[in-house]
Length: 146
Picture 1: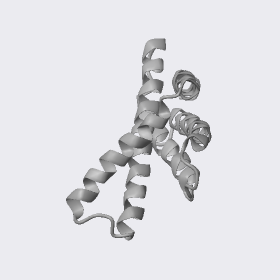
Picture 2 (picture 1 turned 180 degrees about the horizontal axis):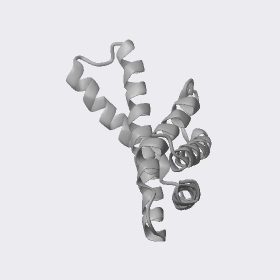
Picture 3 (picture 1 turned 90 degrees about the vertical axis):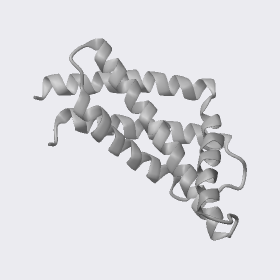
Picture 4 (picture 1 turned 135 degrees about the vertical axis):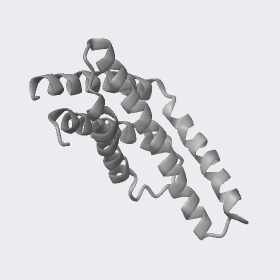
């Protein structure tokens, strides 16, 4: 069911996904073709905001903050996994894996490698501040537009 809380949560996480993606791009090694990096992360932010945060807009301040931080953590998790899967598919097309099990293990390894780029102070500040603000804005939208 579409609600204002879901819409605000989706938009907030899309903006956070864009901000984090722009901050991560200079950190990655040179020569990477970003392709669908930004659009995929923005769409993922929309989906995570709509499905995770929008339906759980809380009843209080602490619940709203927890909802926002949980939404951003889910966004980061799926973003890293999807980008790792995308890289695995690229490598699989170059016949770098001997079988499907090796490819699945490569997704995990690549995802962990990509996650290490997120542990910069300015990215963590964006994650924390963005999560708190998106949780509070989602709660406000849920309360104001019932």
